[in-house]
Amino acid sequence: MSQPTADNGAGSRGNDDSEAQNLPPLRRDSQGNVDLDSVPDVIQWFLDFDQRVAIIRHHNVEEIFQWKQEKSRATGEVVFDFKQAEDRLAIGIIQALAENDSERALHSWISQLLNALDSASKANEAAAEAYKLDLRSGASIVKEAEKIPSAHGRNDFLINCWLETLCTAEARVLGWLYKEFYGRAFAP
Image 1: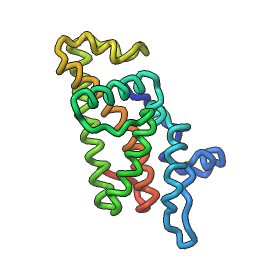
Image 2: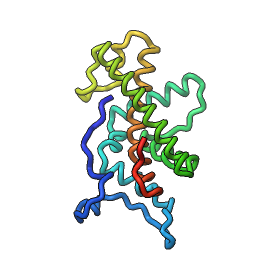
Image 3: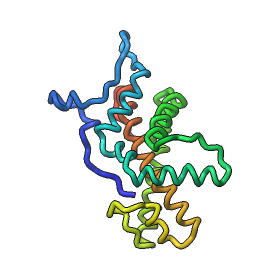
């Protein structure tokens, strides 16, 4: 699934006042420590202003997410029922921060996200080429996946579409938070 490439400046820090207005609102306490209660505001900022994160709200992504939840339920997996894909993203980011509370752990988690993103992206490119899938028209990706002859192949493709979108968005937000928490940009 192709991701938008425009960057709204979330990762840059210039002196331009309009750019400063656009930075996520991560608050700090009187000692300069990050106020973790402001993380939801940061997530919301990225959903509102960063195209690579906001794509999680696209109707095609939502359709894939709902398909994935239903598929998981149908196979007997215990699934937390999220109302929307963006809710899943937000909870995933907060869980990632709770479970990876050191620089090393968060670095490792972001690296895992980037590896999963790379694998999903390559698998999607191969499937799109092999089955002549039109992923740029804006039509339903779930319907387009019906061109893949095997159920297993369709499932893999749609799961990879979800992973590609989710990992992109989560890595983007966590990468920004990593820089804010540890004072240096994430580097794989």
